[in-house]
Image (cartoon, rainbow, N blue to C red; front, side, top):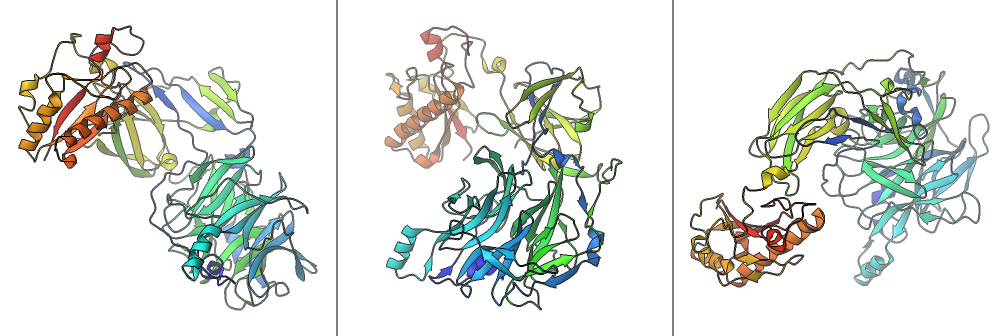
Length: 626
């Protein structure tokens, strides 16, 4: 049925095949905001920044939109659109304005094109007309969505890779490699269709669903950063481009397939999934978004869903009728278009009284990871303090004297800064273990001010809400400048003389290659008469079980990012020198720390001589466990 269109449909050329791979977890960040304040020795009265308080785009997300009343679905009646359905495939019903459109099998199923229903009488359609050739190409067209604000049709089109087709034909293979892409076009004749900037060489993007205001696009893809076979993603409009692509998250996506989405209204997204827990095949689910947070998917009841494939549930403006595609028994062919009708609207008005969520105090387990900022190594024994705070958008008033308007961008989004100092409340503290890890149980729908404290790092403050940001909190800490210096500025001081280099091979021992030099802004090794690298190479060959880490450093001149790259090159060159002397490369790890660990006072903005700066340009040897 519907999957045939994408996976197993026999076309006039060959069989279309797709494969899926395991996915990488990506946190959902749709309409997300995170405020971050950085302090040094004292925690300032924190400044809470409200990002993206919507004045134009998606302003209905405040919870004032109509909501689906699933109780009314038991009175829904389905009728097969017998005069437009055939033995082939009629599927993906969608609105173009107030008119029904769908995808139909043309020429005995050898082609699929977007058509508009016609000849309506007594709530029945008698036929359809095909859209222009600038939309319906020689290849296949699939699920689509019409933007009534910008008068643009977004649709799925099969992209044949001609180069790969030639290679496949040359090898006499009976399959070809294709991708599915999203295209756009105006409906008027003479318009030109073009592929939108959401695309992939090794994956497909399909099933466009444009938001009612035309500013957001939900689509389906088998991108390698998903959770299952196909996932739902979202992007926002930036003039003529789509930016900010993000996965809709593990709550909406599953280990199976999600797709065929459409916006029922500004707050409600309907989609299909073959996940476990449904009636069978593909089932129709819906989610709502309030205060920029997506709800958990809910399964629409019977008769919309059946043990077969049910997709593309759409609702007319009056809320009392709409259409659905299904391959349930009793139809005329593969997928059929069904009209549904109800005695009353399936929408209900939201209550005027604020509804307090039953799970407001629901708790979830949070995994906390603390890392060093530049190296991403575990940061043990760091104190992380969680303070519960109250933060509601409804409490913000533009005439509040503590409120500053920071900026208003060209799309109408307002950026506000709230300078209120919050009253003292109780907090919970934990410490990271030797792996930089800790666990805590927090309220799911509560904001927390998270302060990270340690003796040798700068304090970090972030704001965290489990229902918005997920169940993993990653914190990166910057070692403080004061703790990175040593008491002496004597460039002649050495940690270990060359003759005693690697005198102690106990794991954790650190040696500075004091007779190894680098010029400013150079990764070229300069060796003195006492060649520390030669001594190190000899001792490593004498002790083949010895494993080391080469850490290279720069002075403070130049940008932080550039110095990290430069220090990595220095460490790599030192390793290559040791390997050239016969040392096993598998016994040497390298790391570049840039200017993060200066040995004297010559940090940014401090005038220093060449010798003082050279004292910070060094490579250190750390003995690793066997």
